[in-house]
Length: 232
Image (cartoon, rainbow, N blue to C red; front, top):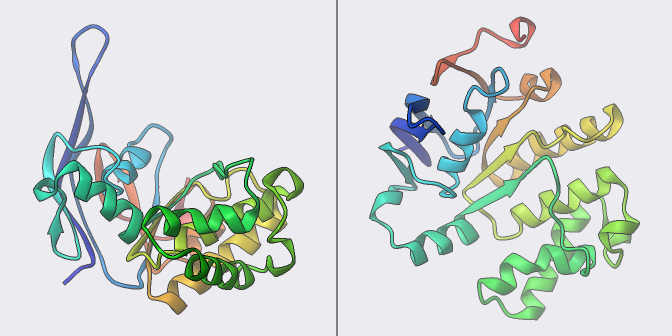
């Protein structure tokens, strides 16, 4: 059974003139445990909208999404919030770290929100920060970290609760080549080591090339992509 499965997803928005704008037109997607899936496509094709639906941040107009067999539509808002906190991890183009907290405290936050004891949360956060190469930067606040370091803190935070699926939207979009490659290595390695499914929306050919599978968003649907060389 797929760890994350979407069937017949449609998303329709109402335009300012009252017309309907269909962004997703029947998306089907099944992601296996530990699989790395890259989604590519033109800007405005609906890639980020799909990621929001998969992350239970928005609801589809039609269709179903299930995580480990649990249908999103069957969950209460409270239960969906718990699912997002404990079973899904998110990494965005902007790191969204809390400025007033240091790296360690930022990574601990999801566990503390979930009710984990502070000592256990601290131990797990220290472990993840060491894994992403920031053992010596734990007490630094975001302003004292480089862009690449900030994004690695965001990755550690996304993985601290050992989620079933990590969703990433243009995670290296604001990084230079060197830091992008460090982040890409990190994603590929951690997804396999932790057996966390990874779904990444990206325009970056090098990141897409590391995926087990590349899908293209076209006309509101996901299609198998022939490969990195053919990417626009």
